[in-house]
Image (cartoon, rainbow, N blue to C red; front, side, top):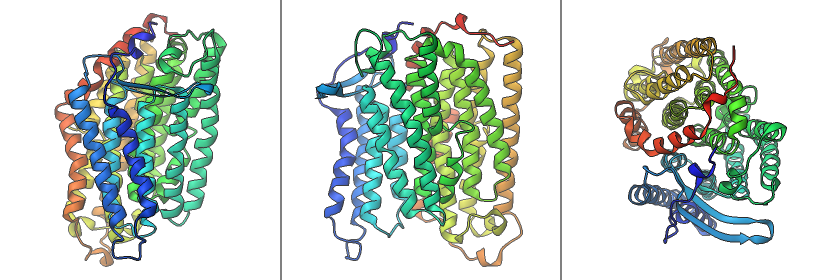
Amino acid sequence: MDANMPMSIDSQTVFPWLSLIVLLPIVGALIMPFLPTQESKNSNLPRNIALVILLADFLIIVLAFANLFDPSSESLQLVERLQWLPSIGLEWSLGVDGISAPLVVLSGLITFLSAAASWKVKQKTRLYFALLLIQASAQALVFLSQDFLLFFLAWELELVPVYLLIAIWGGKRKLYAATKFILYTALASLLILISGLALALSGDQFTFNLSEIAAKSFTGNFGIFCYLGFLIGFGVKLPIFPLHTWLPDAHGEANAPVSMLLAGVLLKMGGYALIRFNVQILPDTHLILAPALIIIGIVNIIYGALNAFAQDNVKRRIACSSVSHMGFVLVGIGAVNALGISGAMLQMISHGLIAAAMFFVTGSFYERTNTLSIPNMGGLAKALPITFAFFLASSLASLALPGMSGFISEITVFLGITSQEGFTSLFRAITILLAAIGLVLTPIYLLSMCRRVFFGPRIPALSIVKEMDARELSIGLSLLVPTLVIGFWPRIAIDLYEVSTNALAQSLITNNLVPIS
């Protein structure tokens, strides 16, 4: 593999746009402690400042990428490198390519909308919105870091706001869910650190720079050791079976805006890191273990779908659905060809929008009904027709209805598997058959949930609830419109990353795949 090809530096930027994207929310977070307390007449000031900063950050992302990012180049762009702590080899090294650019845009959009969805948060607002701003910076830094140590610091930093957001503003079992989240992710981080340090220290040159690490060659047991360390470490965040059990608890106890962040951004960090480290830096090992990745993905798809049937809590059912849908990301990455990796990227973008929309609408009717128990709801379609329309539309997108982004992403993954001649025909046929079972199960558990919540036996106490307001409609449309646009015009998303994923696929020697008979 010519490792320098997909990760080489294309150009450097004069103005530090990427640093501005990362640091602007942090500056906003530092302002929060100096704002008036909640009891004052300016109690909404933290929310308003956070909204302005996150909107400005998102607009900077869009404008900078639209004017300065060249999607026809697979190389790193807008590169910024600054010696930070030379004694330990830490650099402030940022860069963006086709693999990270769409996820940075997605992160900026979802974070702003989650802050807008937090309109009614009244408890400890300065701390709440400061944590959202810190989270925005950490997320962007994960996707833009080109130094392993900087990447790891960002990866760890984003755990803290999520833990506190669940532990303070969560439901009845919030401490249990938050503790489970931090234990799973923190322990997994140890494997990421060990594997990354092993790569940095190997060979003649010690370096944390990802481009320089990718230029090295890692084979044999050492490569497998590092690959498995990354797979488990990043797989917890994805999440992969059986490391997924923190996710339903976290979603079940977190408020809707935090669930939007969890499903819309945090899970995508796991998929992004697998592509960046397992595929791009350890290609030889990935060619050996790609079939195992596909098998894990199939288990995710079927297990997540079956587990969703057992959930009587709306958010827990959607969380299990996320486990199932992220299985397609694993299958696409395991396909090790351009179509498969493209499908994995599109699935991350698509699922980020769809899952955020579903959790937002769920939060909207929870604020009106004060329950997420499916048996305790019924007949809401008549009282909340617009809410029902949004929830149904997001459910249809999630079950891969043609014309929605979910259909395009999942069919691309299927095409990636079927066109991979490095696998035997039997392995491909079994993979497609089992993945198709997940596609059959998805509409059953989603549409049955819609029927029970919105068309079940009518609960008299829920017949007078109020419909979505203009703010909520705007947030819902901001998530569903891109889902429809990508469904009908997928090139708007594919063009951002296609050159990078094609270059990555071409650098993998597909005829060295270990066939599964």
